[in-house]
Image 1: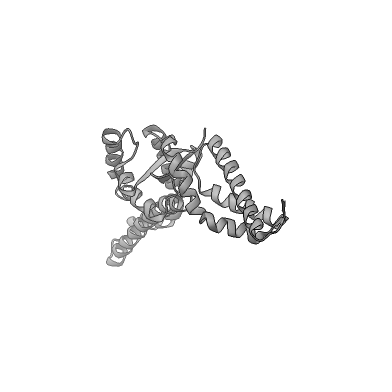
Image 2: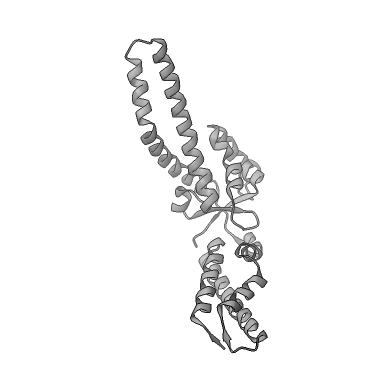
Length: 233
């Protein structure tokens, strides 16, 4: 059966979208992509045959995909069968990513907060009049808001949108739901709550080592129903 170029392009576009949601090792990814491509071509051919045509058009492809579900639904169906075999990242891999992210965060915060830090240092060398004291309080508040804002954007936005921070990306790690599907901003926020409270992240990590070593989940991974896995190899 003949496929129009538009039909072929649409199949490849939809396949690309679906594979973008999947977190799999390279071999598994290649197998799943091959299986899905074959399924989509067969489904599109079936739609063309229903209208007694020997040419598969874009409309046939759209109907075939609508029968399969949305890209997220197709991803979920596949990932649930693969999630158990994904290699989970342990304490040391996650600690290394945390250190990398910490260095990057420190640089970003220093750059953004530098003007306020300079103002605060300048205020220490002049008379502590009431307006100077008020200025110092406002400056310190601004620095605190910058720190919280940068941490929020760096952790919650990066993970909620892409499932990984730059540190995790460099080490080939990714955060996903326990069933293998991508996380959203809600899960990213829940699992990162300890990072907004200083040393609380250390306690959270110790809970992982002591109580959830087998699953390699921090306490707030349990709350968010998330895991961290290796995406390479």
